[in-house]
Image 1 (tube, rainbow, N blue to C red):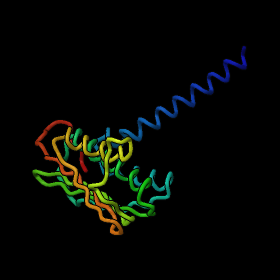
Image 2 (cartoon, rainbow, N blue to C red; image 1 turned 120 degrees about the horizontal axis):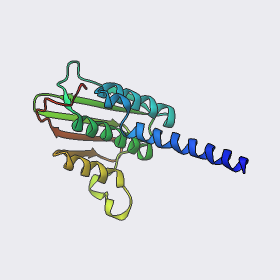
Image 3 (cartoon, helix red, strand yellow; image 1 turned 90 degrees about the vertical axis):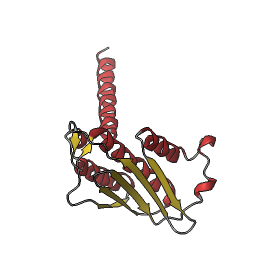
Length: 173
């Protein structure tokens, strides 16, 4: 009986650690603290450690603050788009960039992979779910997703979001 209890405790601790890890990747502590740059920096390190993907980050020198909801949307965009790079681009490098002004947030992920025909992607058949999730997330945030890709020329995903004025809950990119 004591052995069974010990085994259950080990399994419970492992499960708790896995849940914490998933939660941290979904909404990292740095983002909760209002620091999108640190959250993206952690994502960059995680992508390198887990998948061997080197991520260059191009960040604004003095960005406008973002509402927390927009910062979460940008972070999740970077996360899902980089996972698409890992799954489909067959490259070791990608670039993420952020531009923020008074009216607009533009987040971009670029790779130099083989590219694809965006018009041929059909997420309704159970494949290419990532692009469908990215489009839906952009739409729900009042924005849009642009996909630029050609065979042999790489892929650029661009998220465009309106930047609403929100005095409370601002995050510094």
